[in-house]
Amino acid sequence: MKTDGAEEDLIFEHTELTVLSPSSGVLTELKRKRRRIVLEEQMEHSKEADLEALEERRDKTRTSQLMYQRKMIQPYEKLVHPRMFQESDLVLKAAEHIIMGIHAIKFTPKWEGPFKVKKFTPKWEGPFKVKKVYNSDYCILENPSSRKEIAPINFKFDILSLNPL
Image 1 (tube, rainbow, N blue to C red):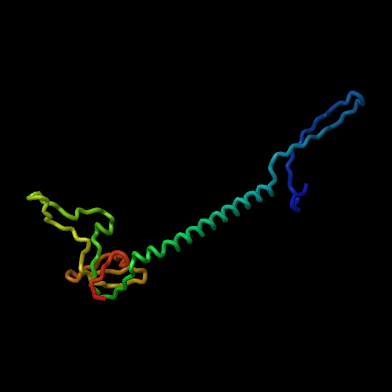
Image 2: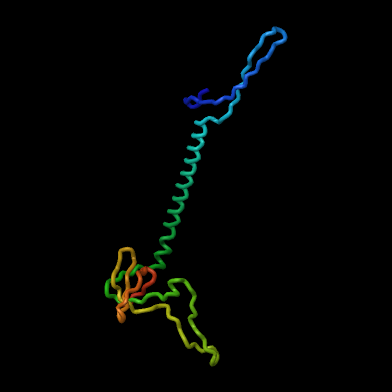
C-alpha cells in the first residue's frame, strides 16, 4: 500500500491454519492477516496536525491580546499623567496603606458630641528628596531630616510633585 507517496510499514499478526479439503483430500495452508498497529506515519501526521492547530490557536490568542492592549492604551493615558523628576526635587509619597491597597480609617470619631472628627489619616507622606532616578520609572527617595533612604518606588503612580511646573 502507498499513501501520499510514502511506503507504509504494516505489522501483521500471522495465523496459520491447516485445512483438509474433503473433495480433493489435499492439505491447504491458509494465512489470515490482521492489522495490529496503526501506521506510524499516520500517527506522526496526526501529531503534526495537532501541533499546527495549537500554533494557530496561540497566534490567534496573541493577536487578540495585542489588540486588547492597543485598545486599553488611550484610557490608560487619560488617567496616568507621566511626571519627570530630577534629583533633589521635593515630592510627596503615597501613604503605605494606599500603596498596599488596604483601607485605613480616615476619620476617627470621638464620641464627645455628635460625631466630631479628631484625627485625619493623610494619603501622602513627606516631603522626601529624590536621591536617584532610574530609567524604569523607579526612584530612591531620601528623608531630608533624617537622611534615611526609602526603598525604590514607582514614581509613575506613587509620587506627587511639590515643585511648581
